[in-house]
Length: 450
Image (cartoon, rainbow, N blue to C red; front, top):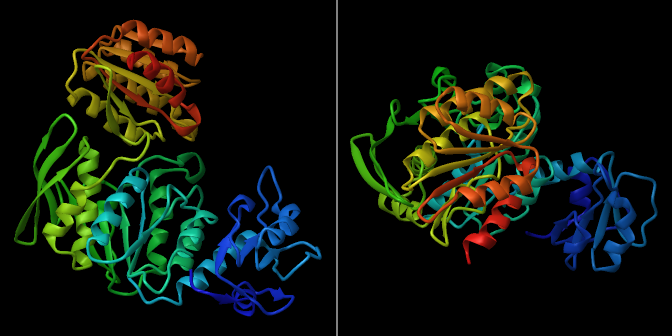
């Protein structure tokens, strides 16, 4: 981060400051205080960081940002709301740099697509990216503060639960190119319908300059209908789009395909499996095209991808093929996971599935559809865990999967999993973050590794 004066900080946040000074970083966690930083006192559900203001100053913070009537033992900036001020400051800081900024969102695949995209863009530019899934009003500005005089491009992931959230994120990010991966049913509980989700995701266009590239999944029924003459809309897909993936061949842990685009063909190999990852890589390649990344450099970058923890990560444990994909789950990503398991080599195919959360009135239908898919795809065993998992089980049994079991206890599920697995089997773990299926993974691995 480049140095900012406290007067700049106060002005950007419509606040006041106690005395002039400089900051060289922004921090919201006292465990990560660095000398010369600005510590912003955020109020969370379970804590109020105002109580750590003096501690932050003692640890070397140059100043603190507050929204309460405190008298810290050092320099401070006073604002109306520290959370809103954090985002406002991020937006002010981003505006100091004239660089290409990619903003991306979607119901599923955001983080993997962000990783692919940052690799592709990074093949030509010194690129910063959203760390992990810090894609909300607190996490996103922390990414913007990574920009400095050496930065040549940024790839920013945007998440949302309600209308207006992406609008606020875009106002701070000021993207020069936008990408929407798909419109599914994640957060339908808050947004009412897929049309509502589409409307919320399209808020990403509010910050785009006229004529800027807007890259959309042409195989998604909702995105395929988007029309806007203000932007350079480009569709990608397997069935529809200017940028198409063809000749897809999946191997044990890699996938080969060709990207056919605007009279050109580029062969791609990605070190992960699943057609959904073909879409993710295709989206990233399309972004690279609009940023003038040479096609072969983009292909080399995609080949260097390393799956992040619990995101479609294929590992061999003992003699069991395990697919860790339980960072999160939605109906779309769950269906992709079942397809991946079906296409993975293995004597028996075993699905360990947890609930998909935040689906509201759609929960029964969504879980039932996934259960039907388990049976129709010939999955040998289904071990289901959670409040709505009974819908998986009943639908799977009705669709031909005789070995479908429901658990309300992860220890019991793990015991059953260990009973039925043998060398050469393939297991996938998939569920929403709140289901914490990594508990089952860790327990099973201790036995399989022996």
